[in-house]
Length: 591
Image 1 (cartoon, rainbow, N blue to C red):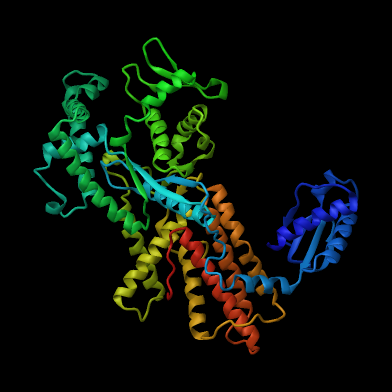
Image 2: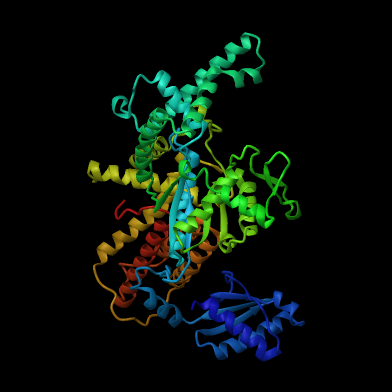
């Protein structure tokens, strides 16, 4: 139990003992630097339950706590703030209890715990992954790791959008203009090659539109009547009817894309436990709609289309089946969610990592699944996130102006190399060591820059500033970790029996920060927010650097103090490494 939880229990106990009043919550804050104390209880909110002078209430509570809590040695009251001084022994005991725990802050999953399925990435197979996918993948992967660390079983999944008119556009363009080009013959990754033909389709399609307009068609007519689009639509119909030649081409080109995706995912450091394909799931959900009509959840219109009326919930009416009996995306998503729970019976909730332009879609989806009576529908969450912009502006994939994920990661490695060389940080490294380190620093900078921001916020990504070795950046934290590892290598002795020393104020502050780690993991999991972990880690590193600048470690003459400080530094390094593992970021041993 951490000190805040202990004090909360005791303040409630004191309130009941002194005033015969039960108080539901206690408000805490860090003690201001000018006052003595380690933790502060805010008295003002208590006046709702007990009228009186806040200073007197603070005095009453302070006296009770010092008498009844051995860990609290002194108190002082400033206006409506009760400042409590925590005994050094509490922090030393805390440190001794966590020192050898290699998974400090992480909770072991219980065997009967319901699993969470987390969907992320979910790309189309007509183009490579781009900057938007980078944020999606980093968020989904990190939230998966955080929820695992908080004690839940996790399945990482994606639904690959491998069918539809977009895919047919790439296929048709390759057929017409590709001259049997392959990834091997072109030297291109498969996803890049297929993406080029998606762009090629758009270019040729625009030429046809211009020609039709010059022949007297309106722009709207030209867009609908362009021969290339009509051919793509025909190809989609053939795919849906199982035409062997179309299916064969579709399988070939998709296999090129999957090989390309695999390389990108590996470089990005993300993975999946299971995959779903839209070509398998696009017919799911129709039977559920029929059942929903019988239950009165859905209703049929005169034209045969099926709808749900959500106006009572402040939403609108939503179609779930067209009049010709074909499904819409909502139908597929209903069916896929149900299928996933059939496939993995221990799934008790799902997280969908999808951009905020789909907020309304998921609001409706979750409400429909609840109305259909599925218990797990109460545990559905849309991990909604804002766009990532570059200084150059918005991206358009069909025009080929997308920031490619592979190119971005290569650029980050190159930027890390450039800045490291300017600073002369890697003198004495072999070329291979430098290459590995540049990649670790560059990817760490990219991931940290994106994950330190609350998912809901839009990001303007600046590659150069993300690789700064100062401030709230990945490289700054990695550098601090490497500095601690250097201290440990020079120290070369073990922490043995618990020592009894007087703690320096900076040691105490560092221990307080470490003490927050377990609840930070739980808070990040509850909020589906890697930013909580990222910013905790930055605070821990700032606290360590303040300790490092104010307290001698290896130069300390007292052996007990020296040993303790080295091992405290080691625990900070271990915690940085654990924190960064939740963000999918590696830490270098030397830098």
